[in-house]
Image 1: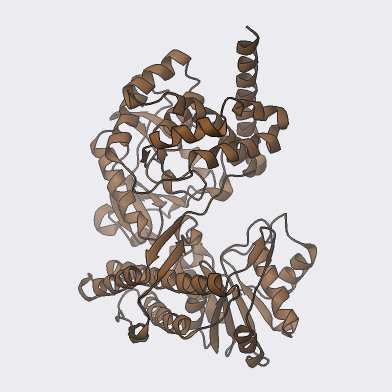
Image 2: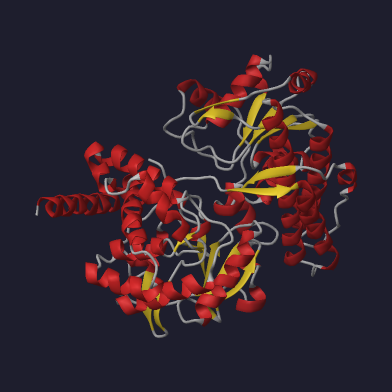
Length: 559
């Protein structure tokens, strides 16, 4: 199934270095405490992007990974920032010293870079503090190898908290479940120079196959590194996924893995999550209630809603004398600031719960109590019209051609070749002719029934802030994507879809909705297939709806 996509950002070296300098300047005036600490993490993430961009640029030009003076300079600055984060965190924000970034001064500012968003920082609550803590168990004198995108920065964290000998970065490439390393002679020499030192492979994951970890370890053994020198630093303590090679799984289970658990570091560390918002909420009167992994349903009137535990954001219920609050992870990277702004505007317009603050990746909202509700078309129209007019996007997600390719792939894989007949009306020429009509916005992209509550404040849409920037293919789309979503999720009649379209996107091509209805169904089919057993029932819902549309189309042709 095809549901994921990498959204890249093109930037000049000069612009990215200016972003780094601006992030560093914030530290000079930032309020001491969590604000300063979070700003230092933002600086570190900017440096990580710079390292990834420079290393990937060289890989594209030469076809092989190789160390360079520019990479070494950015790595040194990254280690300095990581060291500052470590001091700040371990001292409960008492020891906060601006890092020395002097090594950046000699960098060439000419040229362009392509950046990939680091998934762990953005979606999966991979905090720098976790790798700093895990690295304290790293044997002295280790060689640390970070796997890009995110691993270059993670390797710098590991070096900052240990007595590492050297830090390198590589990008495994090739087939999705068979990643391999393309190394130049200079990189091979660095490996040879490591002698008998332990070698730590650092990355987020592992995911479905763990082939980035496994392929890198294969390459190290080919370079003469003894298997007992290799260890792993992943973001979770679990096994490799179901697509892993058996020899990779055997090695994974035989070698040390250094992992620090989120609960041990962020919930029980020197400055635990429950205290980050005390000035707004008062002290917690009970331990945080973990609502992640589908547990939110125990606190929701939608207790029988389907869940997708492995891909849900971390979220917690905070209880204080001032009431109940929701803490939800929305990302450590720069895009999270805009998410808070959207949350405020949705609240002020009466569409969503009240957001109170955004701190170090977590959004604080007032807890809302409500009942199940099916929003009327007029409510859907008001909500989607607001999004269309207030949340324009600077960049677009997947183009229509790619959405159609995704839909065809998912329909064929999930239901067989016959199901691709849903796309028969959509020739290449017809799809391309519609593309100029697309007006990308930050769509909701999660209009499922269980996302809505009837409250004393009116009908509210929950979880409405950031799905247009999720870890999937869709991205920012025309508001027609949400109209299609509403039509499918609420089984709207044709005349109701027309009413919704007239209210939200009048004078624009309704054909765009017709196309996206098919694409939306195929995407949801794929999404819930990846949810495993937990998603089977919801996957079947979309399969039945696809079947009904195929039957309706056949009846229309034969009428």
